[in-house]
Image (cartoon, rainbow, N blue to C red; front, top):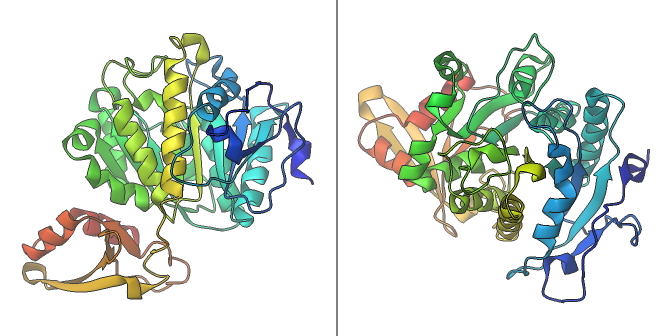
Length: 386
């Protein structure tokens, strides 16, 4: 099936005469432009106006074209971007039909080494992106920027606040790990926090990010798929979401995390969800989302192609013996960017887990090992192979 069969042109109109705007490097499927040629394209944008399984956020299906207007009118950076905008997905008869169509589109894009950027719509669309990898039997790490975990009840119908539980219980399962950044303890059931620990998933409270945002970079660098719920950002910065609260990430922090995500050679798909234009104030949230997308694109074009299992000549190797635990840990430091990784031993099938046994970490992890302490990140990762 031709991809165009699933899609329809965007409806927004934009003046593309100014040569310095982002729109100049984007091939847009619109009422005046044909479906774009995907040759030599790095990223592809898909708008998905689906909100039937949204929780307390009706009308978030109106988001895609409004986000486009704010993203495309930003000025270009110091990069030459090659992006295709495939228009908006034709919504299926049921939400599950939408998931199937979106999974097919995302899957064919990743097969072509094109990074899909999904603009929702509600966050349950993350299931479609996961399914695209699962259908190819590819094990993935999922990273969510969210003020909650969205576990819900796996026995209930899929919704934007239960999509994660649906992924966790799916069989066969291709989720290696899930990481959350930005959750707020008073918004999350304490049993859910314990479940995250029992599953050896990573969860970073808002306060941890606030103390040192750089410690989130290795977590983002370890992800294959990123799912952004705009409610992770404080309501004063992003009022266009009914589930946002007075506390949350600042817009600058969210933009920095998006830049980290773009820079990661491992990141293969990204989606941003839950923006509700009917609640926005003067387009403030849409403007922020446009800036976040710009930061992701900037990060993408700053990639250094230094992922460890590709070329270890670009890395300096350090071996640390943690004497109190009789354990040897192998670290690698990039000669180009000073980023760190560590090896995770203890599994047999390195082909299956090739993208996971080299774990991104920070200099703080190396320092912890040098003090004869097993890094928390290393311990949690090792448990996933057991």
